Length: 340
Image (cartoon, rainbow, N blue to C red):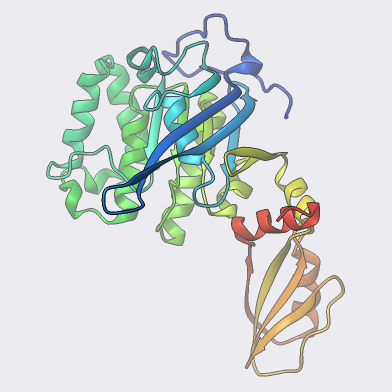
């Protein structure tokens, strides 16, 4: 667990009664069990329990930006839904800013913002600005504060030309930026982001990441980010938690995760012409297709020395670095521990 950051509450933020700053979000052996019925015969059904979250414990300090990752079905979205009060835990203790989300959901709603990448909170057939006006009234945001927040979000997320466009006409990237703005109009102390960059192009991803960095730095907003894109984590979070089969299997720095998994990154090199496999200290060629070559190197190391070596000795046209996907990292972790 990382050390306690300086606590900076956004304007209008409420104090967290009885909640120490280092324990702004607390889960203590939290469980969520679903009952599933399956047809086993003409008139027979079998009931079984699915444990989506299993004895999950962690805490997040106020102002932290934490990556919460894992493969599909690991329990990430279930955790977020319990943190927002949408789902009630089957067991354990859960608190957000000293509040029980399931019991005080309406009160907590004014202190949190949520963005689900594959769903929208915007009104589909209305212009984008109308969704913001509805949020203004629903959260009872003071007029001056609403205008200030709206202007800031519109400027930083480049939404000015989109305000009068019906949501259904927006591209995925535009809608995602619109959803993030909607989640922030009421000055939430906590922002839950579930796949906020899914399906976005490179430019849209950069805009969203830049905005989130600035939001966290300026207002100290606590952010819990779930994503399948390790670059989101690398650029935004100093701490990452990995969940698999409902259990926390790693909590620490991203570099430590790569070391624990003995993962590798890939440097994709485009040369001017087809050449024999390049030779570079610290990397090895794993694939060659014409003038393009793929080099693997330890994920915990910088790509800069490899890039400098290749640029100096080979006719380089272009290159890029590819991160291992989360499923691969977790599979390596389990393989290293001898877990099937």
